[in-house]
Length: 123
Image 1: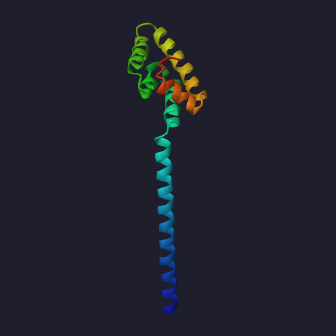
Image 2 (image 1 turned 60 degrees about the vertical axis):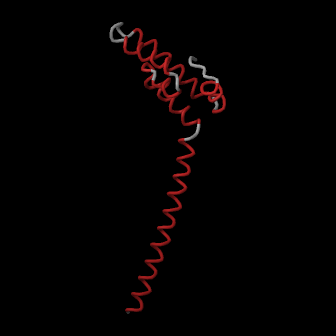
């Protein structure tokens, strides 16, 4: 009986070691994939596009792309909506939606060439 227990204990230890190795491999693969995604231009395109659609009137997508002056203009227009019964923030919001759709419909190369390398700030 004790020999059986020893064999069972060895099998459990071996299985645990194999499982630990599998988990290490999966974690390593996941971290490599995450580095690739977060370092890619597509990630910036997706982030800027989604933020433009959701929070377009605040111009956050402009700051993501490095357009500080344009981001401040949209932020001011968005905040001025408090005093203009929402007219300026509506304009800023419409611009954000249009830009968000444009960002998301462009290919990765086209987006990079137009908005990051070419530095085209509007539409």
